[in-house]
Image 1 (spheres, rainbow, N blue to C red):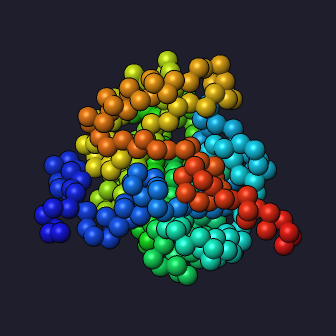
Image 2: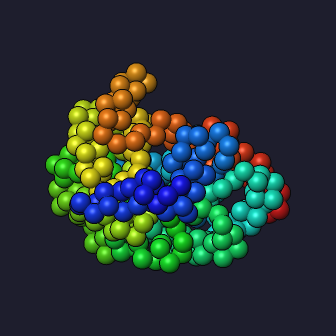
Length: 302
């Protein structure tokens, strides 16, 4: 394959081609390639309990075994424990190609995230390192992520209009200060877009997650899709709201409504249609998780 035929990200008129290593990190990542999800797996390391924003749909749980959703884990690991978990998993399941930090809080607000990525990357240089972030600290941390070899980044972006964003977030904490209302939404949106732009310029492969919140941002998602496409985002994943916390009263979109929206958005930007809204400690292929096997082993060792 010639370089001219590689997929190209277009960022403000500048064409940035994907190189062979980036294409590998797409083709072997089950969240970035639907074909990959049938052959390869991922593991999430729950080393990041702290969060710097409060979404009105989010409840984190650090001792949960019976729910399957973002923000929950059966236990929070320390970096060395996380590396031991990686050792155990890779010894048995050779199809695991991705090691990610996706919570249960905000990975970039926890120093344990960076130590974990360092340990895993040093021992397993060919593993795909990945993070999932709310984007608030992405501009501040992107250089460190680059140094650690993180290539795949997921950013949750629920609004690019702060007027809509202020309906979704209770507060944002940045540089030791708490922001609320429109001020919080403006700060978060500005940081998210800046972080995405800088990550793409550093040749990171970006997935954007958007939670569909009927009556709040559902009509706005088309604008998000146009914006992130223009920024060079690789793939967009829209997820139905899980009604809880302050949005417990909101009825989530039906599967048919979600598919219809995906079809519309697919005309603008590539859509992820195989998401399972995974736990923060998920291990295995999408929809075929095996993390409970390793939870039992950890408890026996303790």
